[in-house]
Image (tube, rainbow, N blue to C red; front, side):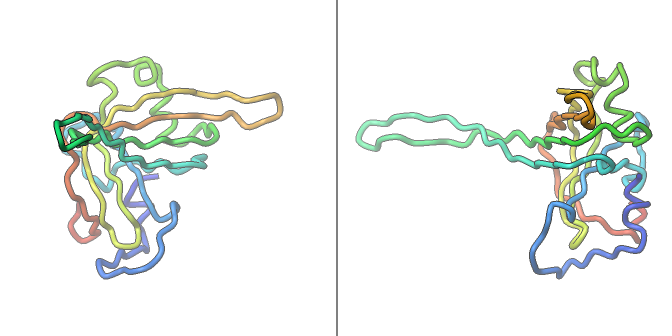
Length: 169
C-alpha cells in the first residue's frame, strides 16, 4: 500500500488537537531505488505489522566537574523504528525488506528515504534510514511466522515534513 492509497479520503487537519493512537502514525519508505520518487509512492509499513515502536535514542556524554558535580551533555539522537509483527507475503514493505540484497546488504545498499507522520494533522519528519532485518520469520509450530525489522536513521538529521494531498508530494 502506498501513502497515496492510504490517504485517499483522509484529510489531515493542521489544527487537530486530541489523543493520538499508534494506528494514527504512518511509517513509509521509498523502495523504488529511483531518485525523485514522489512521497505519495512510498510504501507503508502496515500489513502484518503489530508493533511500530518509534524511539528517540539520545546519545549523551557524562562528565564530573570540580565543585559542579555530574553534568550530562546530549551529543546526538539515533531515531529508530522497531517494526514487529507477522510475515505477510505479498506486502510490498515486507517483501522488499526480506529480499536477499536487503536482509544481507550493507552500507548504502540498505538505505532508503522515509517519512513518518500523523494521519490526524499530517505533521512528522522525513529522512534516510537503514533497513536492518533481525528476524525474517520465527515462532513455534502452529503459530504465525514472526518478523522483526529495525529502520534506523542514517546520515543527516531528519527534517520537518507535513503531508498535504494538494502538494502532489
